[in-house]
Image (cartoon, rainbow, N blue to C red; front, side, top):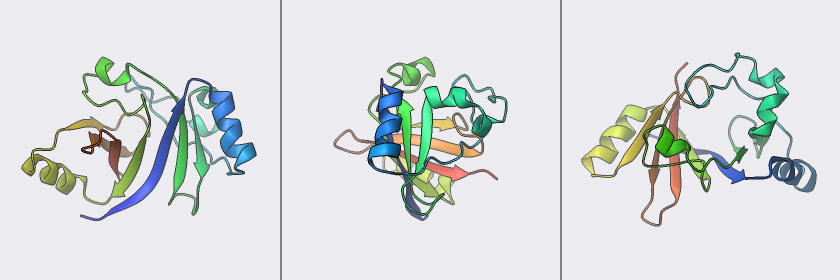
Length: 148
């Protein structure tokens, strides 16, 4: 079970300010949006990369290596976790994310060590199976695996 840092998710109530900071102040290149799924679980027209309405909620920025290290700048959503029946909310304060090739092994290890996690499955980015947990200090961590 190998984990590698994939992205850091930052959240704000002011998306224009957040996007301008990462693109204009830090000079990070905005990446095309992958196909997204809305938070009810329906695919969002499959053309998120062409749909500027997603800019109101999220933007992906290249933080080194394209698909290898990213910043995800998203709208704060204080109630998304509880509304979806999860105890961990990845969009309240943001999170950092690891990518793995064996999410089942991660689930098994967390269960064996009695570490609670929220299994979101494929919920926001099409073809990403995602779980969220917190470290002992309360930092939210995502671990995901590509499904394709």
